[in-house]
Amino acid sequence: MKTSMLDSYHLRQALEGEYPKLLKLQNDLINRLNQLQPGFSDIDMDIIDEELYDSEQLNGKQKTNIQLNECFYIFEKSYLSISLSRLSDPINLMFSSSTTKLLPTQQELENLIKVIINELSVSTVSEALVNKVARNIGKAIQLFAAKCEQSICTDSEGSQVVSVPTPAQLRNISAINILYNFCSMINKMLSEQQNLSSDATTRITDALQCVHSLMHTAIHPFLNSVADCIEAILATMHTEDFSQSAGSQSDSQSSLYMKELQEFIIRIQKDYFSEFQCKDFMYENLAPIACRAIILFMEHISLVRPLGEGGLLRLVVDFAQIELALSPFCRRLTDLGKHYKILKAFRSLLILNTEEFQNNSAIGDVVPYDIVLHHLFSRAPIEMRSPHQVMNWSISRYIQWLDEHPNMSDRLVMIKGTLETYVQTVRNRQQKEFAPIYVIILNILEKGLTSVA
Image (tube, rainbow, N blue to C red; front, side, top):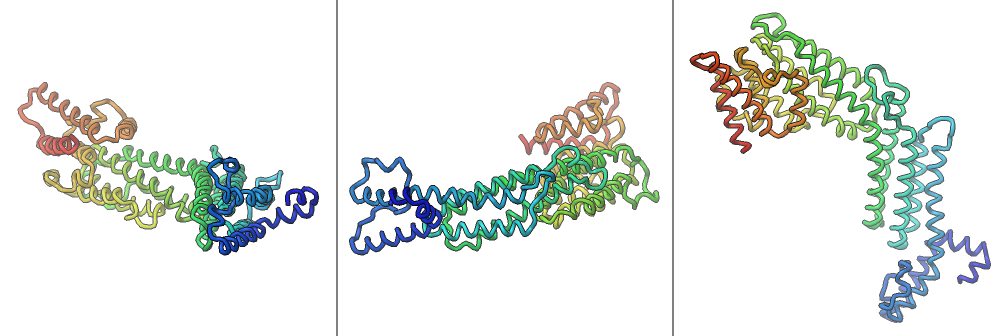
């Protein structure tokens, strides 16, 4: 057979191009021989690795089978090379334009999926062959991702959020939509393949990881800009006056920073988020931003001072407004899990009298100790300074310190030092008693320190 193939180009072309049919004939033949002579084949008739050919561990029957397989090895090698070309050619054609960074159309994606389905279908005559074809499909998926990557912009043009989307951002959005559709089509195709081995399925799904990674690469610069803007807007709450007493007209109105936050999110929802077709992917990546925004919101709220009754009521209104502001970041706010629970619980604490904070089950169990303690400092007399004031830090510097020290024990030690500074101040002034809120803060602090010990 080898000699005939070398002598005839047309014969070689036929055997290589129709290798799956030839392999099926071989397997059928071996099955017939096994029926006539049980035990004729003690090993799988699929092509095996070359290093096993000369193994002394093989018996005579196995060597006979290997000799049959060896005749087919060159056909399989050529077939897999041709198969890879059939998979790669439509991908290269999609991105063949040298003048513009074009992205494939939906029709081109569908045509590629048809090629993949066909390559899998004809190779299912052998599990070993379909696994090798699946490896080729994985290479094609990686090629597709690499071609799409050339169209993605991750610099400032792709991350700005101060105006309408730039051409680069629109191209990034299109690339993400295409990559998401491609993954969905591949997964749908795999679910419909009844005879596909688990190994082949795994090889293809593993290859999709590079597509998922590219989608994250494309969107993260933009999302980081969104998160930075939200953080900057929240920080401006400290430029507003929350020292008003109760009864002012502004009590029932949201704050200026909250209005700015809502306007910003409404704009990016309209200009950016609405352009993404991959809603699941977007919610997956937007939820962490919403969670981060909630934590920052509560940290800043807890540090607001001076804080009057009117200002406190305005902050309570802001809690309801931030829920509306963050609604585009998730299907339901409850999807944000513990962060949403903390938000609701802290709002309930704000409307309590200071004395009611003692023995409140939400403190520590739901709302972190440090946030509650920061807020109680805001209710304290001016001589009982907040931690950032004792350290002579700006609020932004203190927020950064909190980010760098996520462990509650570190945060509570900082607050303990702040409280000790107040005690020393009272003694230096030779005052006879502490502010009534001191005992409440001390009790909650001691509970917190005990819980993290």
